[in-house]
Amino acid sequence: MATSFTISFDSIYLTAELPEVIGIRTDQESISVTVLIDGDEVFSSVYYPYNRMVYFRDVRSIVESAMLEQECDMASLEIEANEDSGYGTVTEEAKVIYSMYRSPYGSEVFLANSFLSLRKSALIPRNGYLNLYNYTKAYAQGSNYAMIYYTQPEIPGVVSTYNCYLGKVQSSWDRIILKRLTYDYFKEVVDDYRQTDSEVLGVEYQIGSRRFNIFFTDEKPTDMFTFLNAFGLLENYYLYGATTTKTEVERSEAVCGWKTLYYDETISIRHEVETAPLPYNEAMWLSQMLTSKWVAVQIASRDSATRKTAEVLTSDIAAEVTDNDKELIRVKFSWKYAEGAEWMKDKDMF
Image (cartoon, rainbow, N blue to C red; front, side, top):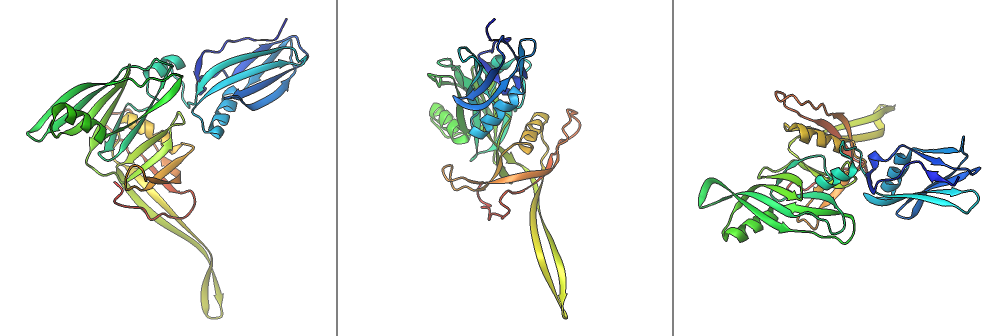
């Protein structure tokens, strides 16, 4: 009996759906198991079989930790079982995409029909932008459409629609494709079609069977956060709500003669946020940001090429999300700059 795996890998996995235990059948006295991410060894250990079986555990944790350390959202995974005799090696291989969530339909079906975000719509300011990601196989990108809702100055109060074909973004290899969507992009599409000035209200954006709704607003957000979402990809959250800045001072007091002095002074500044009312799906998606491994707040922006952010830490999270349509959902949380010093934020950035 040679060495063999008791399972066969699928071609692609969300990391949350990787098998937690992998069985290896062998007649060797020992085998070494090695895990490689994009060809780099991230784990290796020697195992001694019992009843000719070895059980390799905690696969997901090893893979996700390595992907976070290497800052990759998609990678090639190889698991090798090497016989102690040095003559035999068996390997299981798969593509993996970082994910904190599982899909009831399986990884391949989810990736073929969903964008890599857990929200289905977004409200963004007219000078803002939306990062939208999708996974595509080589030469298999779906057709790209947009249903654009717009108004024209000469017909006030009338909302028109324009269903346009935006082509395909083909790739010669399996990868994650980013589309950065803006108000100006869709306005240019409509203006070229109508040969007149227009104002875009919203867009139903589609790639293959994937759909996403974008709504534009003139209201200025109070802040913009950037964070790693459930798939390890950068998303933006435009905050519409109230922020209260609190300054806390801790210090010791001493009396020298008749004079009182302070020493060991510590100043802490915390920003407390209460969002505007949120729909259920938006509130659930926002909960990702509050537990994300990396969150930053925008501190300056003169144009899209010079945006500047600073890393922050979130705390005091009160994210009680209910699907009761009669209750307004407001999420509360606090944040502070990770480096400890406050930034002089540009209040006109939006």
